[in-house]
Image (tube, rainbow, N blue to C red; front, top):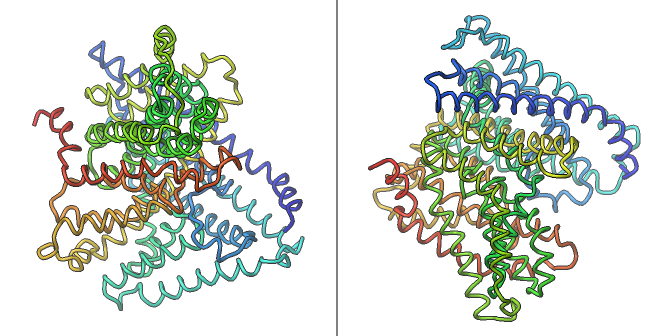
Length: 638
């Protein structure tokens, strides 16, 4: 299909995208209202003996409607997280691959909506009510199911139009179309055959679990979105081994649990906080204050960039967004001051990885929900490793410019009045950090409450910033909807897949393969470290954590290690993978920011000192778990 035809289809499909955008705007505006209610409850608790009765459970029902309403946008724009492992095999013409993926997305999205509607029917049949205020929940579930069903219908219409255009414009006759179709459909056919032959009652649980993982990885390699692949394999496996009714019951339970989880509710709120903070210019405030303090030192601007990436990454929670933002802000400034391109690009690409580790971390929230550990304790545990990562990156720059002075310009004279003014101007990110992290560590807020306070405060900063418009407000909502929707799809898919894994008793299977009595723990940990480093080079951070958790957690528990410690180590490992050759995702993001001015080899050369620092840090974290667990033990009084 020609580019003109594709553009024509996009123009005709504008109404589908617009419909899902309006729905996302509406529900995320509702999320801000819900956050305001949470803030009122916090103030009442702090200054009066009163509280908002039943707010927690009502917020959960509101979240079901909010997530159902925002989920359509990620499907209508086909932005679910995927890997392009087999893209080279499928060829440059990806039209057939996209059409097959659209069908898979429609089927999965329709299944989610069906599960929601059946959840509403069950609530009606059993007269389900909220525990505190006694409200019937069936209407809430029905509203969420209706919103998602409308979005499904919209995405279905869009997909049918794309398939109609394929035949109308003879897109199947274009060079390379059938190559992509054969690779994708052939892989799916192999997956169907493996599923039918090996995932049934005639085979052992170990065989079923092994085949389910193989089929999952094949689908992901074929560019089917990761969350969609998890859902397809999980539901199909449950249906074949336990029956279609049980698969639906598990699905509606997992969908309902995910949509009403107040721990998961923190994710769209933190994403909103990050988007509003970006428009409010907080990244510039952080970078300018760091530059004023350190810019006069040799390599000081690179150090300020790393510190700025860490600070802003903690606010926005996205490694890619941090890299892209500071790539625009800091690289030009370092280039203007004659920093070597390798150091300038490398420090930003590496600094961007800090966002997933330094609290509040979106990926760490999801991990804790999956393994049922305290998010608050995990945030406490991640703080010192995050500070350690920042410190070691700064040391890496210090050593690099000492060994090779040509990487950075000569030392400039320190200007205290300029530094003081920049520090004063950075009061907004300081206040945001103090309220969100201070409230969390001090036990004043739950994770969702901290996220609500952060989102509202960042919104106030954005609104009070010159140039902030309604369009920028809408853009913040859209970006939040897309990222949150993709996270929820992977989370729900991973939970349904994990439900099947639990029926196969995967924990005992893993422990029977790896004998903890005879195999040294250090060897097992070394194998896991290498595995996650390799996985991080090709997998999205969240996907890498969720897809592997059912296999790895039994080992960690069997070796009597703390799951929170392991979560911090895992995040460190997969984030290192984002700057590891040859497929470091952050390096490619940095390359897209700077354009053709820098070859990839220059950026990879620039991240080398930071990779050395990362490997040293991983050795420290794995050898001395006390680095991770000391702060939670102090704060808990143990």
